[in-house]
Length: 168
Image (cartoon, rainbow, N blue to C red):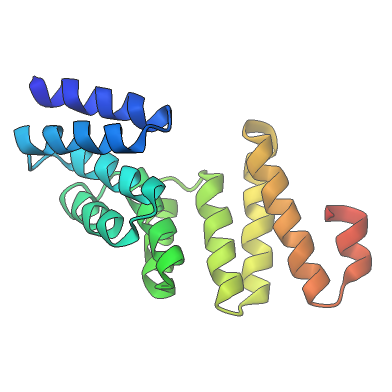
């Protein structure tokens, strides 16, 4: 299928950081198969990387509407919503990602960031700890970020001793 060719070329360009080229290939993929949720998902990711958050939200919303079982769609929609300041949408999307895969550390980390921005320190602490525990063996960079965020949260709450000793 021609759409597969364009999508693969778009993904390669996206991973190489060639965002204009990625958008062009993915536009061609969308033209050959406008109903593909995978095309919409990858186009949304491309617009997210380009910083065009409105377009990213539009494509990612379509992707999760058509393919609600796609974790990446919900995760990236949550990231876009955070950047747009739409925290209720971000929270709902991150929660949906966790429902789809309760062992996805980046979703817990993102949900911790959302809880922190919504001034729910206890919830953020629990989510950062969960992200750190889940990622400790599989994804050390996510674990390190989760524990760093937890340390910052504890420091902000006045527990500087624990923050510095255990997390910062």
